[in-house]
Length: 248
Image: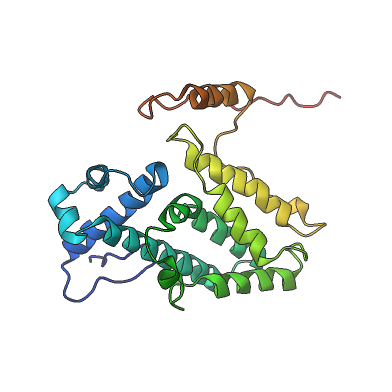
């Protein structure tokens, strides 16, 4: 049994588009989101084709000019964000955990990296203006449910969630770093702990991703200041410190 390919937002391919053509399109959009996040909207289209595993001719046939590709990326990101929020709404988990699941899914879309670079390049108001793409209402519903359950701080508002996602999804300067995504999820989890209502701190989840100690941070800082090549091998993951058991 084969599974129909879908977009990041869960849409099925149009009836007249072949499955392989649809897969190529989705691979291009995924690669474009990564490349635009790392290098901005003026990034080389040939690099997008390379990461997508398609020829340049395939990319230009699907997206004749850069503006077409930029707009398609924006539509795809906002549709995926809406689908992530809707999926969290359907999640039977406790409301705060459903909100937490959405935040991690939204982080993977790299909103803070992709969307600011598109401002002025395309008419973003046309992309977010349609009800099908707008994730604001389902996200607000997640917040309302968590407030009603008493698990989300009562003073947390929609803007606190939305602006935080934009900030934490920006890449580290001097990259790309192979560990950037893992680090972002770790830092998001710290932020999420701060969203919990007083008295709910005992429900904290273990922090994901690499733990960056002083030595590793200094190596990251040296790479940023030194403007080393993005092709440099990934930093060595530090060994987690061993905590000695308490003595009697």
